[in-house]
Structure formats: C-alpha cells, structure tokens
Length: 251
Ligand SMILES: Nc1ncnc2c1ncn2[C@@H]1O[C@H](COP(=O)(O)OP(=O)(O)OP(=O)(O)O)[C@@H](O)[C@H]1O
Ligand SMILES: [Mg+2]
Image 1 (cartoon, rainbow, N blue to C red):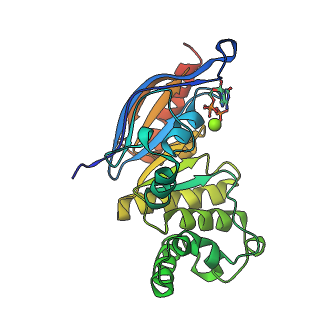
Image 2: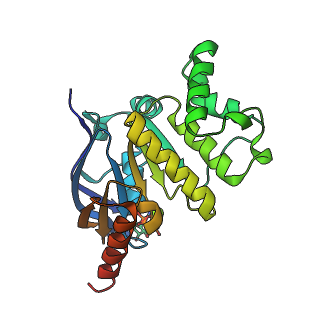
Image 3: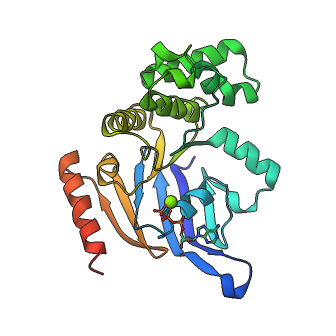
C-alpha cells in the first residue's frame, strides 16, 4: 500500500481549442501529497489554482502529464468510472456551499450515502459521528435557512466528509465567511486532519487560512514558485506566508 494520496507529474493545461485562443494555465507542475498531509495552494489571481484543483477533482482534464489519486491514474478513466471515483474517493468544499434548501441539514449530509445505497442505520451512525466532529449536532433537524453561514459551511464540510473520502479538496471554502466562522471551519478541518488523518488540499489567497496548513505550494504563471513547511507556531507560519507573498510582488 502506498502512502501517496496525490501524484502529479509534469502537469500541463492549455485552455482553448483554436491556436489563437490558446491559454496555458498550467505549464509544468509536479508534486506529491502523502496521507495525512494538509497542503495549501497559493498564488495570484489567474495563476492556475482553480485549474489545478478542478483537474484533481476530476471536473476538468489535463492536456499533458500524470495525475494519480491513491495510486489510480485518473487521466484515463471514462465518464462512469470518473463519477464512481469521485463519489467514493473525493470530498469537495467550495465557496458557495450549495446545500439543498428543502432538505434538513441531516438529509443534506446523508445525501452522498443515500446515493450509495447505505442502510439507514449505517447512515445515522456516520452522519452523527461527523456532525459531532464539526459541532453541528444541535442543528441536524434544522433547514439551511434556519442556521448561520458558518454552520451551513460546516454542514457542507460534513457532507463532503461523511463518506470518508481519501482526499478533501477545498477552493476558498472560507471565502464567503466572516472571520469568526472562517476560523471555526479551519479549526474543524485541522481537527479532521490531525485526528482522523484526512488528507486535505486547500486553495486560498488568504494568509490566515493558509497558516492552518502543514505546507504550502505557491504557484505563479502556471509553475511552482516556492514551497514552505510549517515548523514553529501557526503565528510564525502566518508571518512567513506574508513574507513569501511579499516576495511575489518583487519578481
Ligand atoms: N474555461 C477556461 N477557458 C479559458 N481560459 C480559462 C478557463 N478557466 C480559466 N482560464 C484561464 O486560466 C488561467 C488560470 O485560471 P484559474 O481559474 O486557474 O486561476 P486562479 O489561480 O484560480 O485565480 P483566482 O485566484 O482569481 O481564482 C487564467 O488566466 C484564466 O483566465
Ligand atoms: Mg480560483
């Protein structure tokens, strides 16, 4: 068994079908992510962060290069295989969390399991466990419009995690939250990473969010620009991140 959750080798992405419309969003990117890692992806607007995440999420395809998740090469799966792979192995939290308004928080979280034909007893056990981790047990019977933005976001995180994915992907998941709710979601993600070894890849432009990661990859113009690892306190890491962001504007 490999401990490697993500393997990316010489990844390239060119948008546009006609020559004159071509845009190389990712030039040549290689990196690995091991089980239990918490990796941040940072970079200026337009540097290719969402492109990279969408390829990992199997929502878009690479032009060239290798992309493997838990040892499986995802660049050669057909549509049905991709849908099954996504449903079993991946969890997503995006900026607009898209809970279904006419389902309770419980039903929203249970949805991925219902779609996989889990028994209702198993579903209850799994939903209650993840709800406890994310501190939303009290609101399970409420509807999305009856709870706070932060609680909605944690419910969306619970839905992304209830089937115990190998990899959790987030694209600016705290983008729509105020600082208190953002902090609470980040603390929850940190707990999941440390206590349940959930592997997380988080795209963010925000140094505070990034300071929760264990390592950060900085991209610029579709290339890896720098990588840093957290060594000391979160506050020291935060300052180091700000210094790297400063460096960007100078090159
Ligand atoms: N569907 C598309 N067709 C053509 N070009 C695209 C498409 N999606 C993105 N691009 C271009 O690819 C580049 C990378 O875009 P991407 O969305 O990955 O950037 P990003 O780093 O996520 O930026 P932001 O921080 O603003 O979200 C940009 O120049 C963008 O205009
Ligand atoms: Mg983006």
